[in-house]
Amino acid sequence: MSTQGINQLLGELRAMSALAAGKQAPAAEETPEVDFSNVLKSTLEQVNQVQQTSQELQKRFELGEEGVDIQDVMVTMQKASLSFQTMVQARNKLVSAYQEIMNTQV
Image (cartoon, rainbow, N blue to C red; front, side, top):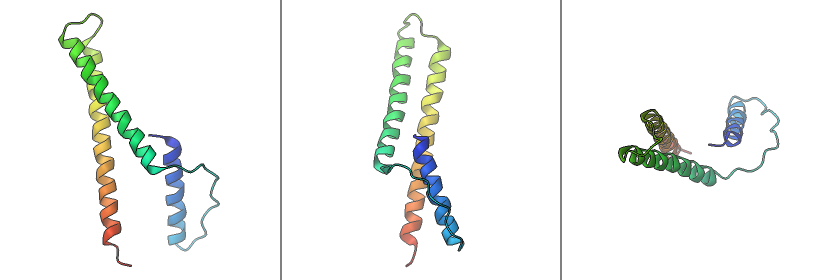
């Protein structure tokens, strides 16, 4: 995930928080427009790539290919697992935020 997108989101959240508290929002820094769908898509592609790399390394180890160590296989499996778990948690937070917004009465 892009740190630039995260920093922009944090800046926007801080500005909204200041406005909600009745304070004047801090001056916003000029940051380029970030498309949420592109960030989400690239993140999903990265998670998919890590999963595929892990599966490929597992297959190579199972076939007894030279130069493939069990340590490398285990590390890539853990990376794939962590990236997937992180993606699931982010999805859960997005769904929760969406539901909260939909339940907000205007």
